[in-house]
Length: 104
Image (tube, rainbow, N blue to C red):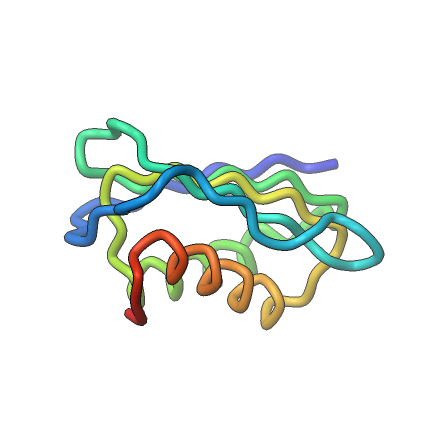
């Protein structure tokens, strides 16, 4: 297992709901826990993944997600069992949409 940490600044969109869990960890999928947190305007993402060595790919997917959603004061925890980048993006978008009530 590998654990990755990312932090993004300068978001502008606040979360409006209680913590949400999206997805299930099983057979090549992942789960995303998203919650509001007092992070001085930051968005922190922790990823626990069974697929070691994909840090640059995760960085690209997380940067793309942050560019789309611009979340602030948000903590996201991802438990991954080998999901593809497309599935990761889908789950993150589902979680963010649930917490913000709309599309990016």
